[in-house]
Image (tube, rainbow, N blue to C red; front, side):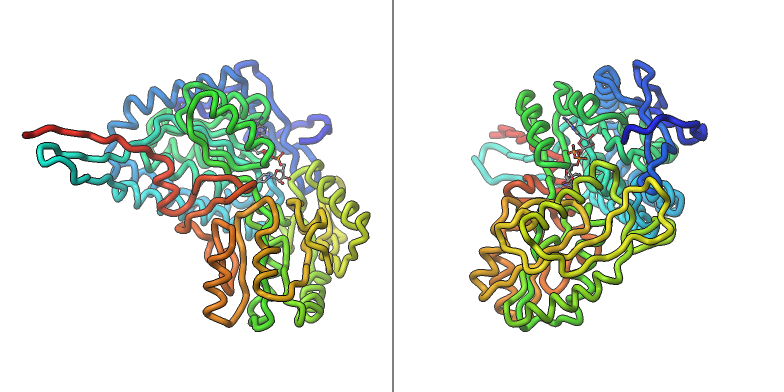
Length: 490
Ligand code: TXE
C-alpha cells in the first residue's frame, strides 16, 4: 500500500471476502487499493475487512465446524485437500503470474511457491487419516483412550512474503486436522489466497470450512486475533505484531504459533567444500529479495579463508540484478515502499557505522519507474555487534564476520535475539554433528541450506523467532489438542 490515488481496475481484479462459501463485500463497503511492487501502480482492489466481517467469518466457521465439516471422516477431509492440491498444481501458471504481480517475486519463484502449496496440501491431505491418539496403560479396571481432536475454529494471519506457502503449511494443516478456518492475508499480497480459496469452493469444501477476510492488520487482523470465537491462532510476521497477537490470544486463553523471522547464520569452516557452498551462500539471501524469514543473512567465515570467501561471494554479488519479475531476474522489487525504505535505511545505518560494502549488485536499466527496487549489498567485514549483524533487514543485505574456532563460531551463530535457521559448512563429520547440535535454531542445515522446500520438516524458532512448530507432521499435531477418555469397565 502507498499513498497513490486509485485508478480504474479491471473487474476481475476487484476482490471480495469469502465468508460461508459466499463472495461478499466489506460490511461498510470499503475497499483497499492494491499496488504492484513492479511499478507502484494500483492494479487490484480488495475488500477492507471490518470487525463485523471477522465476526461473520468466525460464525460461518463455527457453523461448519459444528455441522457439515465435522461430519466428514478424516479420509474425506484428506481427499478434499488432495483434490485441492491437484487443482492448485493445474493452475500453477496462473497463480504464479498473479503472485508475481502482487508480491513482485520473480515468476519462477512464484511458480515454485504454487508447487509448494500443492505439495503442502497433498502432504497434509495424505496425513489427515494417519493422525491418531494413544491408549494409556492405567488401572486394570479402566480403559484410557487419548484422542487427537481439532481445536475448533482457527485464525490464520498470513504475511505477504510467501502467501501461498504459508497458507499451505498453516491452513492446510489446520483443515487436515479438522478445524474450520478464518484466514486474514496480508493487505499487500492477498490475491493468490483468495484465488486458492475460490478453487477450494469449487472442489467441494463445505461452506464455512475455509473463510478469507482481506484487509488491514490493525482492523481485520487485530479483530481476528482478539475474537473470542477463535480457538487457536497461527501468525507469521514481525515480532512486534506477534506480541500484539499473542497478547490478544492470551485475553481469550487460546494458544498461538508465532513465526517471527530471523537473523540466520551460515557458518563456513576452513575445510568446507566452497564450490558447493558458494551458490547457496548467495542464494539464501537473494531468494525473494531477502524477504524470507529463513534468509541466510549472516556469513560466519573461519579466519583462514575469510578473504577468499569474501572475494568469491563479492564476485557473485556484482553480477546480481534486481529486475522486473516477469523477466525472471535474480530478485524482484521489495513488497512496498515502506519495505524499500526500510532496506535503504539499514544500508545507510550500516554505512553510518563505518561498515564497508564489499560488493553490490545492480538494478536493471529497464525496471518500470515507481517500482520498489533495491540493489543487493554485501558488507564485509562486519563486527558481530553491528546493527546489520543483529537486526533483521528483510532485504538483499548480507554481512560477513570472521571467527577463529568452533567455540567462537557457535557463540556468534547463537548471538542474536533470533533462532530460526542455521547452516554449517564443513567436511568434518564429527564437527558437523557437534556444531549442528549446538545451534539454537529450529532447523539446522549441514552442507546445504533450505534444501528441497522443507514441507515435511518441522519449522519454527527459538527466542525472538517465535514459538510453536509448523510444517511436517509436527505442524499437523500443532493444530490439534487431546481429549482423554477414561472408561470404567470393572
Ligand atoms: O509485518 P506485520 P509487516 C518482518 C520483516 C518486515 C517487518 C514488517 O522484518 O520488514 O516484519 O512487515 C497483519 N493484529 N516480517 O509490517 O505487521 C498484517 O496485516 C493482527 C517477517 O508487513 O507483522 C499481515 O497480515 N494482525 C515475516 C501480518 O500481520 C496484524 C513476514 C504481517 O504483518 C496486525 C513479514 C495487528 N495489530 C514481515 N498488524 C516472516 N516471519 O516471514 C498487522 N497485522
